[in-house]
Image 1 (cartoon, rainbow, N blue to C red):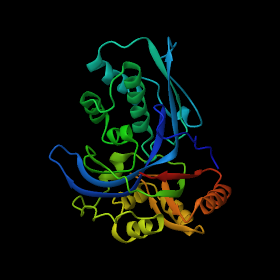
Image 2 (image 1 turned 120 degrees about the vertical axis):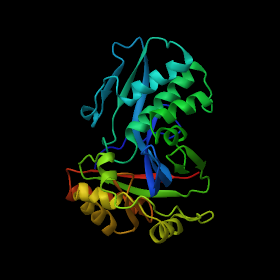
Image 3 (image 1 turned 90 degrees about the vertical axis):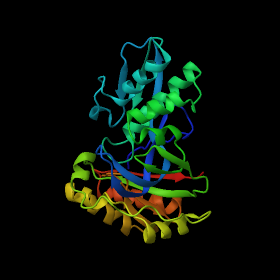
Length: 295
């Protein structure tokens, strides 16, 4: 079972995994962007990002998934730096050190979370409030998931991700995350999407506990990208089956555009046992037990 990199989700340099509990595709705009309706929670695992004064390199990357990233100017961390400099003026000489613990192109917002962590770190260094509209605009320009990751709290997002409503009633969830070792490109998944006019999310149940939320998600919601992602990477179906068959699993579903699958479990002990068993059966997969959600 791979180390997920636990850290306090509120830490400026912690890039928490983003989990789409539900993701409905409700339309497509004239500019090609898709309209979405999504329920999102953040996990207690993620990447770590640090500012380094007088750094010899703009971005140094390590960690178990560091080799899968380019440290060039297109990296979202450096694009976030440039976005802040564009409105705040020249930055002091500094660099970033990124410890990459989340799989790349895995549907749990790793790159977006890293960019959001960079924005938070720079905002702290430059005494820029996190609700500064210039910072929010910079996050929106970096990508649809970056504003959500900048908040890193349970939320309901719609539009192309720019309309965000905090979800303070979200319960704490014992979860397993399983990635079968494949990266799935989001554009490829959307190209396989059969319908782009799905229904929006129904009204959320008030103050749900974990069991009630799992039952609601299973009966009333979906991830519209799950089927096309399985067409793109059939091994996702195996991950769904293994997580869903584990004792104590209340719901198994893919997050985002894949390929990571999450399971909501009865409690942390059940999640730990399931993660250990799946990791033993599939040692080539990334499998972690964690907690997510809460207001």
